[in-house]
Length: 370
Ligand SMILES: Cc1cc2nc3c(=O)[nH]c(=O)nc-3n(C[C@H](O)[C@H](O)[C@H](O)COP(=O)(O)OP(=O)(O)OC[C@H]3O[C@@H](n4cnc5c(N)ncnc54)[C@H](O)[C@@H]3O)c2cc1C
Image (tube, rainbow, N blue to C red):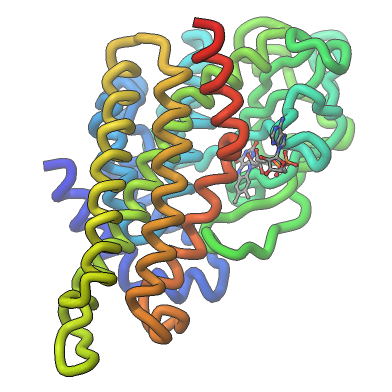
């Protein structure tokens, strides 16, 4: 039922606008309000805080079905649910959850999450943005880079330095609301793909944040962020799965319709084998993603399995969408056909929330230490 509901939503509300939003790089805020009405912006949030109270299987289904139609919208839904909302859900106290989760789960507010800085992406622990205690407030200074919903977001969960550089316990998470003096958005990125998902800088200029906006304890921010990413990586795996499936769907259909040498191109083994590889890899990616989702549902440690899923599914999305363009031939290289957008969008999946190289580092660490 959830799959059908999301599919109907994506077909009716997203599909007709995909290229228009992509071309104009428009982040369609009203669409997210509609997604909120359907419960898609607080999938994992318990009903007592205004969410849908569902589990990771349903969450993977939601992101797969959206990603199948538009990667950008899928990325934004994933960032809102897993990162900003997920961080408050996991580490906020009761008062903080009651204050922010109902607004986020219904999409009355759109959420952003800021870890990355200009000089510290994979090496996020080296961040330079600081928070200095001053009475019952903290004063934030610095900037965050590549932040999804940095401008349109109504609220951001940010991880900043409260201790020494290089100390993994020297960082703390805060919630900053839009309109707080000294908090603003900077440059908006002009991107290869995921163009309808807004990506901007966040700037903190003597931004005073009350102590009651601190999540958990001082010094826990980096460890919290790594736990948030364990779940977030399942969402990027699910999004990758959707993009791979979307690319496969259009390539399969086209291969049966397009004729060369008097026969459908699907009858050439070279094309049929591409489809066979795509189908096999998508199935394997789905199983890895569902394995991670199952562990997460059962409250088990999921670091290795979510990296397995994110690493594999994102690489599959790139391979499947590359082959989809190839199956479409010259038409695949034009914007009149959907393959090129899957191809452009897919690449983000091997970069955001930890690159493929970083996933391999995580997996290697897990494998070698156990
Ligand atoms: C569209 C988009 C949306 C994003 N949204 C958010 C968001 O909402 N919030 C947020 O905080 N961040 C966000 N990011 C940032 C994203 O998480 C980072 O871009 C990513 O973690 C990589 O960091 P980097 O770009 O600085 O690359 P770098 O860390 O500079 O990496 C460059 C290359 O070096 C490799 N590399 C780095 N270190 C190692 C190593 N130790 N071993 C081997 N290889 C290594 C990388 O794999 C990569 O190939 C977003 C990025 C994009 C593009």
